Length: 341
Image 1 (cartoon, rainbow, N blue to C red):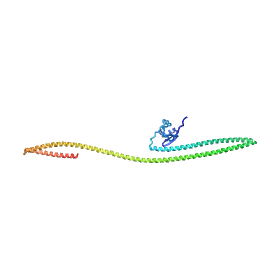
Image 2: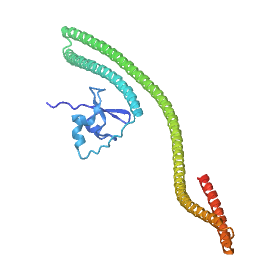
Image 3: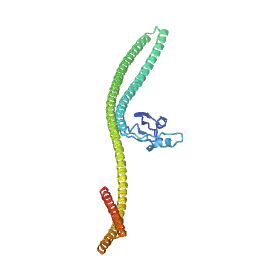
Image 4: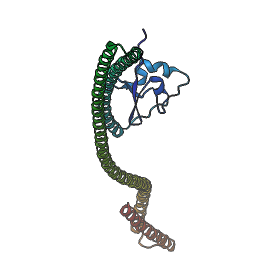
């Protein structure tokens, strides 16, 4: 024997749809293999559609083109969870009330059916008595001179009147019972409507409360995002200034190294030049000392100088003066170079 197909609830677009059969749920928009479903008998035990055997064949069908569900942010997931719990409570309460109303309707249907059967029986009995009474009346009309037929007619008529009275009394009692059952059903329907209306209002209030909390969280999140954006801009500005400062420091360091290298080269050149000048100075000092020794020797050898010797002596003195000026200039240049270095 084939098992009856179960109906399912589906959680789509933050609302619970159903109960529907799997084929009807598969035709709903936004249905996918990740849609949460649960059977009517196990409400609250949600799971993905592709994990249920009833939806696997529908998902494997080429006609089905499910849309992959986008990942839900944590804030929307919390909101969906709250709405889902409220809707589950509403559906459970609604299903309980519907079961009670169905049970009362079944009881009312049984009572009505029994009453109609009793009424049919009473009506059939009344019709039979009426037919019998008619036949008795006809026979009494044919044989009015016989006294027993009149007595029989009165007896049958009395019994039929009693039966009709009992039937009418039973019909009145059943009518009162039906009215009472109708009043109870109406009271239960009114109670169901009131509870449903109260539940809807409570759900709306809770939804408004959740909406206000979500708005407050959104405003707080926007403020935090604005603060984070401001801090990011400040950090970016500081990073730019830091990079600019590093570029300036690198340029200054490069200029300093270039200048230092140039100064080192100039010092090396000056040291070489000073060394060469010192060697030249030593050579000139040696030549000067030799010339002075020769002059002293000439002066000691002859007291009287000839004109040629005097000219030679004048030339030597002029050269000595030039060399003295040259050495003084060289000494001042060396002092300036060392001072500059």
